[in-house]
Image (cartoon, rainbow, N blue to C red):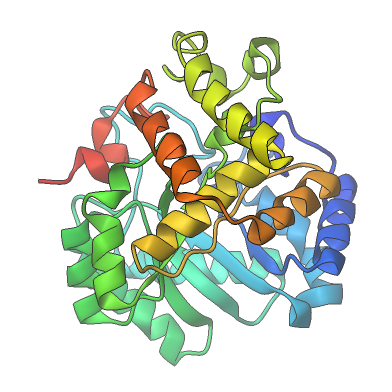
Length: 324
């Protein structure tokens, strides 16, 4: 997602060079979605241009990467206001159509991990996942995933067909999934893929209000009106980073990896970046061992945060808005 226009963007050629360098360094899990990318003029439905950007790279490096993509959001791009309008589609016939469209754009025969990006409130999740399971039977998809599902939705889906991974936001300042979803994943043996594990860049300490003024981050309560108040959360990350001699990003990811281990769930964070140097920097988090005192200090961050994590005005857009 970060290698598209949503956070300021880059060219397709630059994006592929970044990915080439990152793959060479050992980063082999590529996560995209049909709704990522800048829409073409006159187009409707998911933009698909981020998938198209990946196609030339995959033509050269398909065997060396694990490829994930998503379907289900029917808007032309991510970050639109979803209140009062139908913006998801989980109909079985749409599942098949969306998968075929992604395969064409990516120019591959098989997707390693195929997610339902958001649930459709009008379609039982069992019907959507049942159709997704047919994609596995057909050889179009290897594994199934769900994004921003509640624990109940996850259990119902997993009873229909094996779910390999759940992707939802999880980070030092976004902890709501720990209440229900993460424990359900641990119980069922389902992996967790945290998106925005660096707080959409805020936790790195490298952003300024001017940098995010024109993208969706500046429209959120946390990074808009709450920018100044949330500096106290950032200060805690910076303090621990200084103690260890690491970057804020490395500390944030190290905390997440250790927290997942504590909660007994397999975890593969997907921090977004537009540069290979930042992606490679993130790899250093795997070598950091935070002390119990440092973990406790970092755990305190969630209690200091102003504003919630939702990028939409509709509280149901994220799992915590639908949890009972």
